[in-house]
Image 1 (spheres, rainbow, N blue to C red):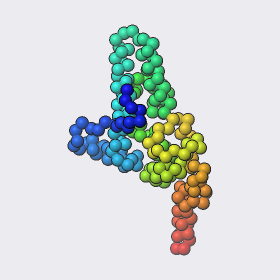
Image 2 (cartoon, rainbow, N blue to C red):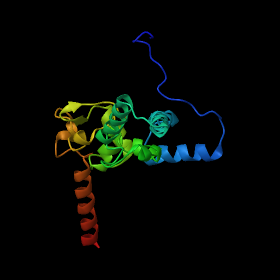
Image 3 (cartoon, rainbow, N blue to C red):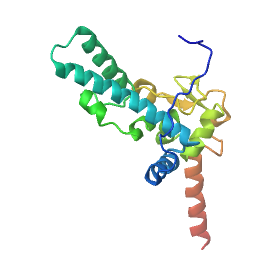
Image 4 (cartoon, rainbow, N blue to C red):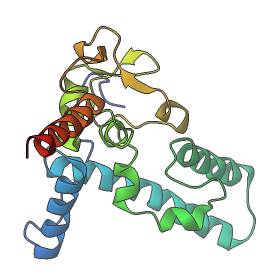
Length: 192
C-alpha cells in the first residue's frame, strides 16, 4: 500500500497518440459537455472501463457454474452504485453495464446537471459558476465541476446562499436574462 497523501493519475491516456476518429470524438465531448480538456474525457473513459472490466469478470465467473456469495455481493455492489448515481436504470443488469458509453458518465457531472436544470445559460458558464462557488448541492457549496451527483442530490442543486447570484435581480441569472430578452424584443417591435 502506498502513501495515502500521494496523488496518482486517475485516468489512462490513449495507447496511440494520433487517431483521427478518437480525437474528433474527444473534441465533440469537450464541446458538448463544456469540458476543460481531454483529460476529463479520459477520466470518464477510465471510470467506465473499470466498471466494464469488473462486469466482464463477474459475468465470466457466473458462466463457470457455481455462483459464490462473494460474486453475488460484488455484483450487487456494482449495480447498486451505478443505480445510485443514475448511470444505470433501476432494472439494469451486468449486461447493461457492458453497453454503457462515456456520455452516460459525463451526464452525471455537477456541471452538466446544473446547466440542464436551468441554473446557467451555457455549460461553460455552469463550469464557471461551480468553480467560483455559486452552486450548492443540499445547501453545501461544491466547487468541483466533475462532482458525480447521485439521483437524490440531483433535485437539490441551487445557488449557494451567500452567492450574489442568489438574488433575483442579478443580471446573470437565466430567468432574468430570458425576461430581459423578451422585454427588449417587445420594445423593438413597439418602436417600429
